[in-house]
Length: 252
Image (tube, rainbow, N blue to C red; front, side):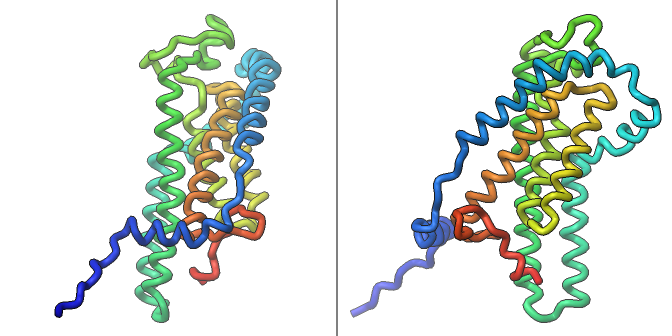
């Protein structure tokens, strides 16, 4: 008699087993509270801050505008992805030269970190650009002609693609992902993200509500993907409170 040999499990079956093994650790995530908070912040910015800052956009101090213009492109998707590729390549070269013990395992973990950050930023950017095109809000550059309530949906014109801010979305996803990966520096990353988002208002290409919506969208994607990864035990583990906890000990 010939014994039946079970086929080698594929990736999906392994992921399903990892998910099932952690099912009892899953906790309900307060998505509704996050959504309502984000909507209220964006609404307050829209009705309270957009008009006065739209009026004052041309009267800000030139040095401040110049500095903001120099750093605002950190939020460009191409720059972020290029930086992530640089980190991955540098890490690979350093591992080959210096780290002999468990170097392959560390490299896989570093690759997972880069993939997580890149996926968070890329997905958030795609959604933000679809929304910008569908909503068609006029930028502050047209404030004198159209005000803050001007919308031209499905308009390819750059001047009618203000909400949400694409740069702010990328920044929100990037720095939220970093804050989750390195919780010790969480407040630093949050502060940097807020200031970089503010540069979009300072240089006069977005209203505060555009920036608030972009940051919230990026934060949501980074957090949602971290929750998903934690439930599979990839890169994050599920903490005692059900929130994602980075497994940084595996890297160091």
